[in-house]
Amino acid sequence: MARFTCLLAGPIHPTPALRATVAGTRVVAADAGIRHAAALGLRPELWVGDFDSEPDAAVGAGIARQVLPRDKAETDGELAIAAAVERGATSILLVGAFGGRSDHAFSHLVVALREAEAGREIELFDGRERAWPLTADGFPHRFDAAPGAQFSLLKFSDLAGLSIEGARFPLDGVALPFSSILTQSNEATGPVTVTLASGRAVLLLQADPAVR
Image 1 (spheres, rainbow, N blue to C red):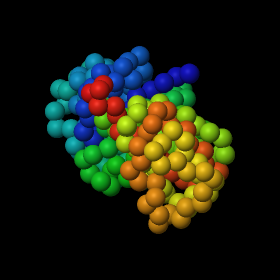
Image 2 (image 1 turned 135 degrees about the horizontal axis):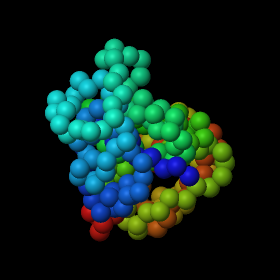
Image 3 (image 1 turned 135 degrees about the vertical axis):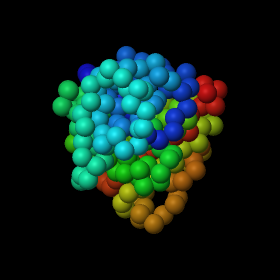
Image 4 (image 1 turned 30 degrees about the vertical axis):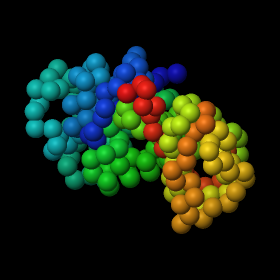
């Protein structure tokens, strides 16, 4: 498996957990995401973007660049993911996908769902929050979580056949409309298992405070 980290421009918290997660991965930086490389002990093999948000070129000195036009249909993050896929990525970690501009965070979640539906393993992690797109295949998917960790299921459509185990508020095969907020602010009692028959959603998990 070729595991890649894509460094995006949102804020990060370089916790031991995040450092351990990115260790040993190949790295592509998207524009201002290059700023996270030093804090995480990483050296990207490629730096992509229109470079409208990273004024200090010295930060990425010696790293191969793919310069993109400012007016384009794709975001720098999308093109960083595409570059990783072209290099054989089968597993992708997005770092710096949360915080910053809300529209950017939303687009990263949508892109993550799209990549998961294309059959790629994808995760988002900034040191304090982790997220995984859910595969609507009717099979249980297990996510490691410490007892007491807060999590939410962010819906991007109506959901059907949703079950949640290992939580203070479990669910069993329910159907939920997009407008429902029933899946917000749950609490793990240990590893969380989610099953989804149809729909689009992302599991957002708060990191264990003990590992910050």
